[in-house]
Amino acid sequence: MRKQLTPTLEGFEREVLPALLDRIEDWQALRFEALPRHKLLKTISVLRDYFVTEIYVEAEKINLLAAFSMQEANAVAQGDPALRSHLMQAELKYSPASLLAQCTGTEEEAQARALELMGHRAMFDYELSTPRYYEAPGLLFTLLDPSHHGLEPAELPSGVPETLRQTLEIAIAFQDLKERAKHESLRVLSELRRALCALGEDTGLGSLIFYLTLDEILTADWTQVDMLRAQAEQRKHHDTLCRDLAPNAVQLSLRDCELLSSGGVKTLDEGTLGGICVAGSGRATGRVYRIADETAYGPEAFEGFEPGDIIVCHMVNPAWLPQVLQAGAVISVVGGWLSHMAIVAREKQILMLVGAQGLEALSHGDVITVTDRGEIEPESDSSEALRA
Image (cartoon, rainbow, N blue to C red; front, side, top):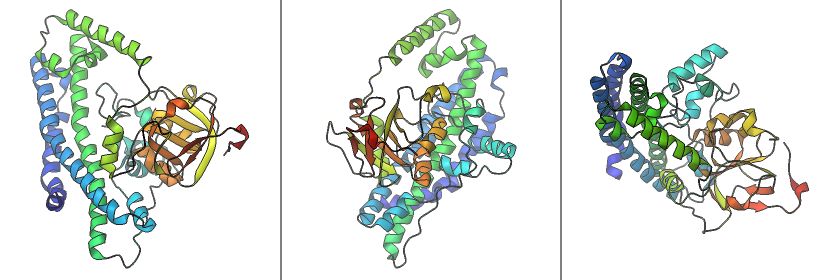
């Protein structure tokens, strides 16, 4: 794997990216609504196959090499705060936080630049039913923070041996390439969503099209649209019922993937109340503010929230930026140190724990203390709560 690091870095820029952008230009030039249905279905098939078997294969190779290089870098930086800071606070040009930091100028200029850079992405990037930012620009504009100028990188101390420096720099380069590969590959999903929306309009299914699988869409008898509509409506109803009964705990999945991807090695004993610190330092005490629905945002979702409250959730929604900036700390079941909100939290020195477990023991309004060691300690005396 070590031998693949440099060739992969160079190959993405020289071969993979130009080929991807060339195909994206062809799809962007198409008005999917004007295609006959059989050609639209063929285009959906091509987009699906290209994403699954070609471009995301390249992105996943990069993900694996990024994990490998970060594990090596973590090993050599272990016990050295300066080296660790250099890894944690590296400048990643293609992270969402860095891309949004480029959106400067007047409000109109910043918004136009944000749409240019991030319009093909979404609040939940890989969920095809989620509108892209170009469809719902208001969601993107809530992420623009005039005071945000990107994370200040931590310089390497002098005297670091060249081999050690190279290990750290290649790990940082791959973390940025990982972000870039994801950013660029999501252009394919944006076009796939656009084609699916066109099919929804053509067949009269509208947004119900997203309650059918891609295999069902591509093999369906489209002379029987009513049967497909009934199937999609049944699934939508089932999904609505399940949302209220969904378990809060994560069994495996995204936490483990994020840990592997970031090179993290810390694990928690089963049943332990705590998480993995990806931002902030020291400790913070405050009142638990639980959010059950990670898709909710705006004043209604944060009724009763006060500065200094500790946000406890399953996953941090980027639209919560105004509240995160006021929070005493943030605790999330799902997340990683490269997420947009983790980067913002590091810049603003807000304690953030991800991969948290044992949160079912916390109730809305409890007073807890969070530490940069990943500890969550319930407080018996509510007067301990700190307010910003």
